[in-house]
Structures are given as structure tokens and as C-alpha cells.
Length: 224
Image (cartoon, rainbow, N blue to C red; front, side, top):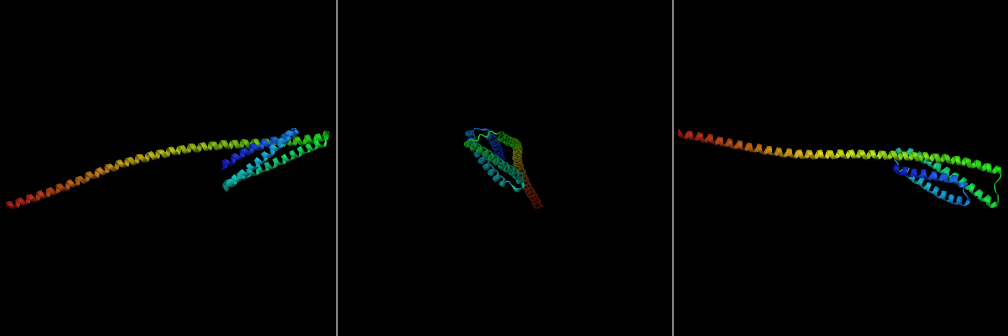
């Protein structure tokens, strides 16, 4: 279950990094490209929301004792999603203002307006740069988690392989023990047969001896 969450997490980090980069590019694009870029960002924001929903469902399936860490990460991702939507709205407002000014014939060349616009763009770029850095750190963390998960999986496979070899050796020892028990059983059966035969012979000899003694006594009595 956690592996599915981590997969969605990595997809979300890549997608938000792309969205952040595109939002930062919107103010500097020509009108036609801006309109197309805005449409792309809207679609990617919807994809990011769907990923958050999938991640939320995965978190609900995680046992309560392990859910805390994932819940904290979800809160962070939702906050980031809110900031992305806010930045996108600001970008769209700036885009709409620019289109309106063009339609009204306002060239916006006053030095004061340009200075304000440059300051806003600078603050916006700095904010986007910070988001890109956070996304990069999350990607690195996700990659590290994937590597650690792969190592754990390899160790588990190695342990399973060792356990399998132990089970096979135990089976071989059981087979050898069964074979030895079969041999011992046959030897004991042969010994019992010989003991019974010897006892029968002893009984027959005793009977013969007793009959011989009785016959000898009878002959001696008759002679007298």
C-alpha cells in the first residue's frame, strides 16, 4: 500500500514542478502562447488534484499506527496545491489585465507601472524558485525512499532464498531419516524372526529330550 502512495507522491512532485515552471513563464509569453499555456496549466492542475485524491484514498487504507507520517505529508501537499492555485490565479489576473489594457489602448509604459510590475515579477519568480527547490528536494527524498525500498526488497528476497535452502536441506534430512528408519525396521523384523525361530528350535529340542528321557525310563523299568 505505501509503495502505491510513494508512486503517486513522485508523480505529484514532478507535476507540481512542471506547473510551477509554467506559471513562472506565463507573464513573459506573447498573448497567443499565454492563452495556450494557461490552458495547459489548468489541465495539469486538475491532474494534480486527482493525484491528491488518489493519495488521500491510499492514506485511508494505511493502518492507523502508521498513518500519521503520511497524513502530515498530505497536509503539506494540499498546502502546496493551494499556493499553486493562488499563484495561477495571480498569473491569470495579470494576463487578463494585460489583455484588457491592450484592448483599451493602454500601453502601460509609465515608469511607475513598470517598476511595480518588475517588483511583482521578481517576487513571483523568487517564490517559484523556492517551490522548485522544494519540489527538487521532494524528488530526491522520493528517489531515496525508492532506493531504500529496493534494498529492503533485495534483502527480503535473499532471506527468502536462504530460508528456502534451509527448508530444502531439512526435507533432505527428513528423507534420509525416513530411509534409515526403514532400514532399521527391516533389521529389527529380521532379528525378531530369528529369535522366534530359535525359540521354536529350543522348544522342539526340549520336547525331544523329555521324550527320550521318558523312553529310557520306560525301557529300564520293563527290563527289571
